[in-house]
Length: 220
Ligand SMILES: Nc1nc2c(ncn2[C@@H]2O[C@H](COP(=O)(O)OP(=O)(O)O)[C@@H](O)[C@H]2O)c(=O)[nH]1
Ligand SMILES: [Mg+2]
Image (cartoon, rainbow, N blue to C red; front, side, top):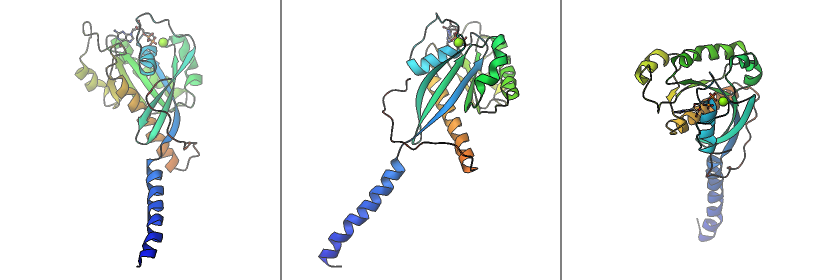
């Protein structure tokens, strides 16, 4: 190869290499519907507030109807947007679960560490979800773990009883923020996993390939 050929060749190699590098580094964006279910007062709204706004308050006004918050979680080379559908957990709302849960990509079931009844009721909420014909991946959050006094079961006891049924089990506190990032990261990961499985099955699902969203905020 003479000198002239070398100079012609090199830029071609680099342009192919650059193209491949850019393709593999390209960020993808995807958006999911996340629903939060559980008894009233367990901290569903507080967990969404902690994740989306970095805030916590003891003076929560009970959620009426549904509210929406958004958070963006990075999973691999995806910006995963979670649209959080937060709703009241009152019994009278249970009849509306089917409307609320329609098309949910992932569900966080919330129980309170200091309210064993609310943990037992995780099964009830799951049944309502299934009765509504929805079968999204489930993540369980046992919230209020900052309250040590009055907790009837230890985390180990809860794990022993529930982790077989609910392998994605997180102990969290909306008050201190403990475990909350991991909780929503797991929700994003599960939703993405299921979506990729569906894509591989050839289901027609819209994942938009867009450039990276601005970094720095995981907030609404
Ligand atoms: N100590 C403590 N209190 C919490 C926590 N999360 C929520 N709360 C309180 O529990 C009450 C009910 O919370 P809320 O988010 O409205 O529950 P929701 O009805 O499930 O949406 C409020 O007074 C919250 O401040 C937590 O992690 N620790
Ligand atoms: Mg609420």
